[in-house]
Length: 114
Length: 111
Image 1 (cartoon, helix red, strand yellow):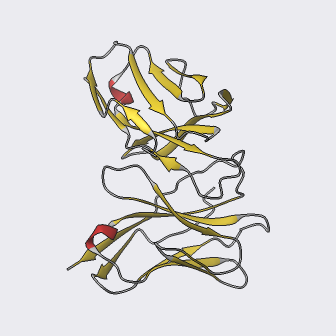
Image 2 (tube, chains in turn blue, red):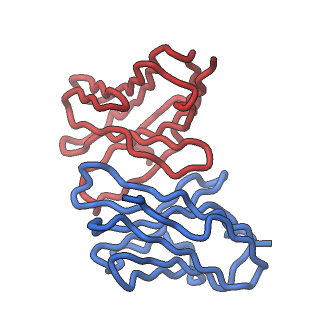
């Protein structure tokens, strides 16, 4: 298994542009999570899905952020318009239910908004 | 409110056992203790979890006190590759109970 796959690994964009981050979870995992990590705030849970349905998006910072999971093998996190304060590393993770073996995280996307 | 308390940093000599403590005095009966680690620039990695019995796997051992108010993660023979931030998290193993990361312990393994 290739694990959780995120793309791109690095993204540099200008303020105001739309940014889309992508995630492919582990096959058979029915939960998917998006986290954001910054030096100031550490690791924050933004949103999670169960069977492709968003369950809790209370961590999404504002309406500029949106996430979708059109099928069991693909999810996107979109920021529109992007701002410099969105610069962070964004991680995707997946798990089974219950998560007897923990969450499996991807390698992350490092986003820089200039 | 933080459910766990960990020292911000620790050092360990390569080849020695690394013992990482965690206090969780308000843990409830159905909450497990989870440990994750994050090596620089990588995503967090699950290590081990337990309810009340001591647990061991290929990565580490988890010792939970009888009153469950504290635990220790043991890396029996630390290597330089074990240098990372280690997170202790208490939660029930159902995904409706979110996996929330605190500040963790930064373990530095030195030669």
